Amino acid sequence: MKRTTINLEKLAARERQIVEAIYRLEEATVGEVLDAIDDPPSYSAVRAILATLVQKGVIEYRNVKNKYLYRAVLPKDSAQKSMLKSLLENFFAGNPAKAVAALLDVARSDMNDSDYAELKKLIDKARKENR
Image 1 (cartoon, one colour):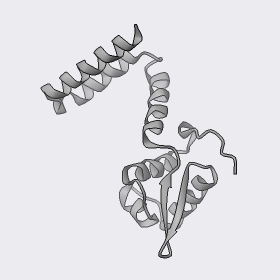
Image 2 (tube, helix red, strand yellow):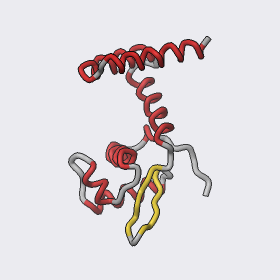
Image 3 (cartoon, one colour):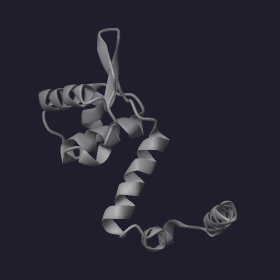
Image 4 (cartoon, one colour):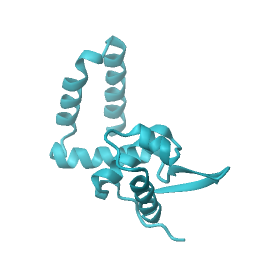
């Protein structure tokens, strides 16, 4: 079966919530997905959404001891980059400096000196590779 490009940004809110739970869990049953999301719909609604996501090629499943285990098709790092690119374009007008400033503002109380040192290394590396 030929897969089309997976566009996570175009998922409905509930679909995205379920896909995000699957990424966090790496692989999950319907019950585990239900436990992992806030204000979940019914069990049968989650099953139906999972079936839709399988049909869209976003997730896949395997049957283990009569339980379906769902996992994402797109590797987590690819999904992260795709979602960050969308976030950057939609909320920060494509300006990475504005996005980083907002991230630092939100995370400031959780960051320590080693976090800042790691960010500096990443910035220096990106600058060097961009020359």
